[in-house]
Image (tube, rainbow, N blue to C red; front, side, top):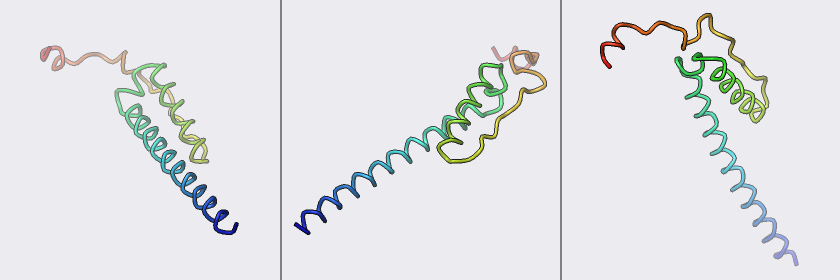
Length: 91
């Protein structure tokens, strides 16, 4: 009986450890997505992209148990910035 309980506890511990590993993989993936979305030229392109970044940030902050650090609207949206002559001539 004692060995049966120990085996069951060992099985449950392995399941919990595997679940934690899977959660850590998913959190890392979410952090990677946040980093990509937070790149200059992406998050500050328009309202939608800023909202995407801030939405991902609130998800990560919730999982990590911290207050989210939101980004504010830039003075000029990326979509409204003039295209430089260099980028036009390289097309």
